[in-house]
Length: 98
Image 1 (tube, rainbow, N blue to C red):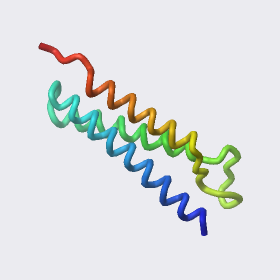
Image 2: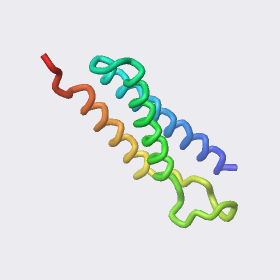
Image 3: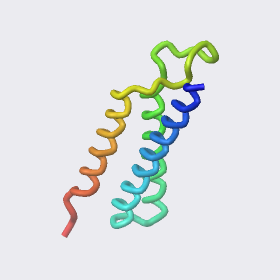
Image 4: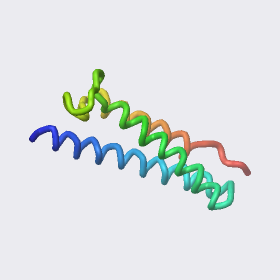
Protein backbone atom coordinates (compact mmCIF):
# COMPACT_ATOMS: atom_id res chain seq x y z
CA UNK A 1 0.00 0.00 0.00
CA UNK A 2 2.90 2.34 0.66
CA UNK A 3 4.05 2.08 -2.97
CA UNK A 4 0.84 3.82 -4.06
CA UNK A 5 1.74 6.83 -1.94
CA UNK A 6 5.19 6.84 -3.50
CA UNK A 7 3.61 6.87 -6.96
CA UNK A 8 1.35 9.78 -6.03
CA UNK A 9 4.23 11.79 -4.56
CA UNK A 10 6.44 11.15 -7.59
CA UNK A 11 3.59 12.08 -9.94
CA UNK A 12 3.05 15.38 -8.13
CA UNK A 13 6.80 16.19 -8.16
CA UNK A 14 7.12 15.36 -11.86
CA UNK A 15 4.06 17.36 -12.86
CA UNK A 16 5.10 20.40 -10.83
CA UNK A 17 8.57 20.31 -12.41
CA UNK A 18 7.16 19.98 -15.94
CA UNK A 19 4.49 22.67 -15.50
CA UNK A 20 6.89 25.14 -13.92
CA UNK A 21 9.39 24.50 -16.72
CA UNK A 22 6.68 25.14 -19.31
CA UNK A 23 5.69 28.39 -17.60
CA UNK A 24 9.25 29.70 -17.28
CA UNK A 25 10.19 28.88 -20.88
CA UNK A 26 6.95 30.25 -22.30
CA UNK A 27 7.22 33.50 -20.36
CA UNK A 28 10.82 33.93 -21.50
CA UNK A 29 10.26 33.26 -25.21
CA UNK A 30 6.92 35.05 -25.55
CA UNK A 31 8.75 38.38 -25.33
CA UNK A 32 11.12 37.40 -28.14
CA UNK A 33 9.06 35.23 -30.51
CA UNK A 34 5.48 34.79 -31.65
CA UNK A 35 3.29 33.21 -28.98
CA UNK A 36 2.74 30.00 -31.01
CA UNK A 37 6.47 29.40 -31.37
CA UNK A 38 7.04 30.26 -27.72
CA UNK A 39 4.39 27.74 -26.73
CA UNK A 40 5.87 25.02 -28.96
CA UNK A 41 9.35 25.54 -27.51
CA UNK A 42 7.90 25.48 -23.99
CA UNK A 43 5.97 22.25 -24.66
CA UNK A 44 9.06 20.54 -26.07
CA UNK A 45 11.20 21.65 -23.13
CA UNK A 46 8.66 20.61 -20.53
CA UNK A 47 8.24 17.23 -22.23
CA UNK A 48 11.96 16.62 -21.86
CA UNK A 49 11.73 17.68 -18.22
CA UNK A 50 8.85 15.24 -17.70
CA UNK A 51 10.81 12.36 -19.20
CA UNK A 52 14.05 13.15 -17.41
CA UNK A 53 12.40 13.45 -14.02
CA UNK A 54 10.53 10.18 -14.53
CA UNK A 55 13.82 8.46 -15.38
CA UNK A 56 15.26 9.79 -12.11
CA UNK A 57 12.61 7.96 -10.11
CA UNK A 58 12.84 4.63 -11.96
CA UNK A 59 14.46 1.77 -10.01
CA UNK A 60 17.89 0.71 -11.24
CA UNK A 61 16.85 -2.84 -12.16
CA UNK A 62 13.33 -2.10 -13.36
CA UNK A 63 11.29 -5.08 -14.56
CA UNK A 64 7.60 -4.61 -15.20
CA UNK A 65 5.50 -6.28 -12.53
CA UNK A 66 8.49 -7.69 -10.62
CA UNK A 67 9.17 -4.78 -8.28
CA UNK A 68 8.22 -1.23 -7.42
CA UNK A 69 7.38 1.13 -10.28
CA UNK A 70 9.03 4.15 -8.71
CA UNK A 71 11.78 4.65 -6.18
CA UNK A 72 11.40 7.79 -4.11
CA UNK A 73 14.77 8.97 -2.82
CA UNK A 74 16.11 12.19 -1.38
CA UNK A 75 18.77 12.43 -4.08
CA UNK A 76 16.21 12.24 -6.89
CA UNK A 77 14.02 14.92 -5.32
CA UNK A 78 17.09 17.09 -4.74
CA UNK A 79 18.18 16.64 -8.37
CA UNK A 80 14.76 17.69 -9.65
CA UNK A 81 14.83 20.74 -7.38
CA UNK A 82 18.29 21.72 -8.65
CA UNK A 83 17.25 21.29 -12.30
CA UNK A 84 14.21 23.53 -11.87
CA UNK A 85 16.24 26.07 -9.86
CA UNK A 86 18.90 26.28 -12.59
CA UNK A 87 16.21 26.83 -15.21
CA UNK A 88 14.62 29.51 -13.05
CA UNK A 89 17.90 31.37 -12.63
CA UNK A 90 18.71 31.02 -16.33
CA UNK A 91 15.35 32.31 -17.56
CA UNK A 92 14.82 34.91 -14.84
CA UNK A 93 18.23 36.54 -15.00
CA UNK A 94 19.12 36.00 -18.65
CA UNK A 95 20.40 39.19 -20.27
CA UNK A 96 17.63 41.19 -21.92
CA UNK A 97 18.08 42.90 -25.27
CA UNK A 98 17.85 46.67 -24.99
